[in-house]
Image 1 (spheres, helix red, strand yellow):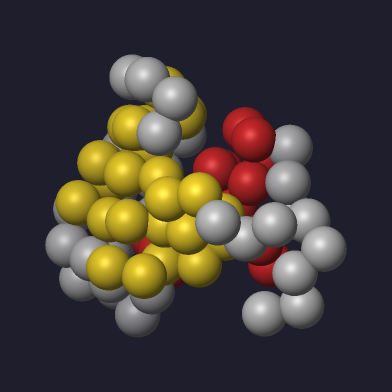
Image 2 (cartoon, rainbow, N blue to C red; image 1 turned 90 degrees about the vertical axis):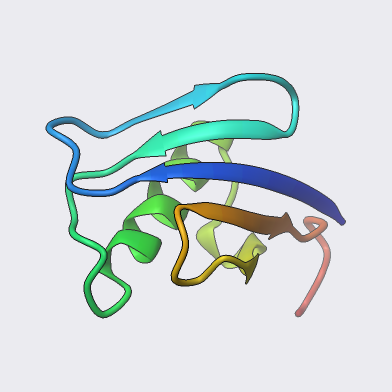
Length: 79
């Protein structure tokens, strides 16, 4: 399992994913941090950027913070 460290930018004018190194990313999304909308958008944008299924990404820390840790599960994982 790989851990990705995310700096979130909710309510951004545009959606983008910028890698600062192999495990650190800045993810900007247009959705507000309300009822998990920004978290869902971050997972969606990050999955598209990495070319993986959204089900392989799980927020393990920082649900209500701009600093998040997201775990990337292995491709054959059922969790």
